[in-house]
Length: 186
Figure 1 (cartoon, rainbow, N blue to C red):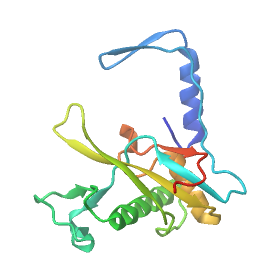
Figure 2 (cartoon, one colour):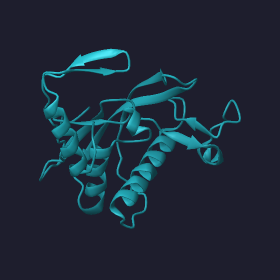
Figure 3 (cartoon, rainbow, N blue to C red):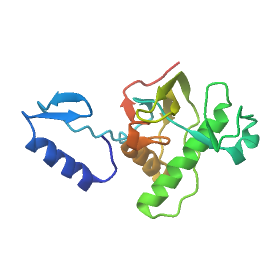
Figure 4 (tube, rainbow, N blue to C red):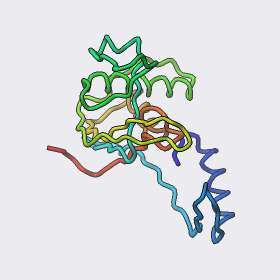
């Protein structure tokens, strides 16, 4: 679980502490809670370059009315299409940056336009995941984002993305990111 809201995380941690040593059921699965450790991915201070890697697939949906802009021809009359590896990375980057700016604006109530944050990226793989209880398959992708030092609003928006998730459907576990120590991806 990740969230930019520290009070929410504190409430979850309090509840987890109260059930250590107990068994709980999620769906049909049983889990024994033995402990937990909060992770706080923070952009390093005074950094030159770092890499952010997708820990779970990033979901980016492109609205039907923007498909022509990205030279995408949907196979059916869907309201949106999931970004796929055969589409231009420009569509992925633009939709991702717009989504981050929108979520940041809603959370912080600050005026912010989409920012150019992702200048380099490396596609790793595409995955299709059926949503349990629905007749929907979600298309997500895994990426590495080598980043040069950012400051000001760009840094704040990027940190927010680390806390809240990249892309869409974060509440279903998509788009969670890891900060790695890799300096270069070659």
